[in-house]
Image (tube, one colour):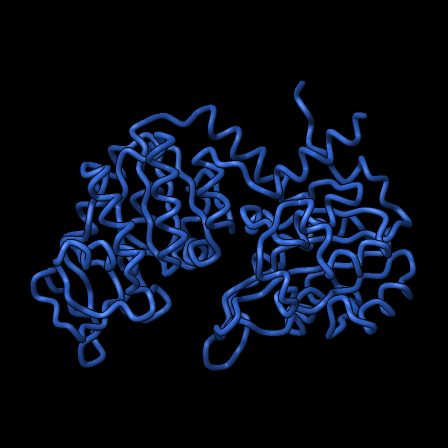
Length: 403
């Protein structure tokens, strides 16, 4: 039996107290703490508008413990007020007495934004739905809600209590972003054809390694074009560069890279040259010319040309993570040129991640890409055929509704 995923309309939410899990986790300026990009807040606003007649409690995480983007959602509330043009209540609490009092006082039409979910220890861990439902976080909150809406597609691959716990106990449906993403990806899957090329960059090395293996195993990556910190790790594992990888230089990661290269030797393309910062300027150097203290910020022109030719000869191209630090003057060439190669190709093209969404706007090629998603790891794993906890939660909710 095919189970249809429930939508907001299936919940008849008007007048009810609804828990809405969104993903407003966005880049933060490391020095000023300002929010650099608002796309995910704009996406969340679509579902919030469609829940305007209920007692709505909005929840999101922001950043990771120990990083500069691990901040309160107070600034997110300000942005959300501006986007919606209406009052948004904000509470510096998640499930404590202050939050409970605010939730209990809501009237139909009120919107309350809880503080950063990751201020709660349990929200930094993953659980089975049954165990997530038994967490203190879920047990404290579930009694105050009549329904749950899951719209955090960028976090769909994480089994956090706010995603798989409350949805295990409450009538649950997918929000507008989840429906939009799944419809678009399923449509693209029907027309996608090989050869399949994946372009991976960015800084989330462990996530990228998981994605690479999943894509290759599911025959969704005939070629993997590497850039960013993940490329540095591959180059270091082969002895081609000696520079430090900071916290990413960990034995388990290097061992995983060597295993991937051994198992799939024909799949990977590594940079031929790189762009470093020297005396404030962009300087391109060959791999063998790198010094141990070289500050790598982009791929070089030879690499860009080589990768662009592969992209233009592909049937489907998926790109996740920018090839370089495009935010820094002089180091956006790799990101811009590879995005333009995708935009000018006949391939089915998919771009994922908040940073690349910002880059598409910056370089003016957004409209030439078939599908753009602010999701990163979740999108990669979905394309690779992996089950996502959020989608599984919606499937189970659909099954309960049909009984």
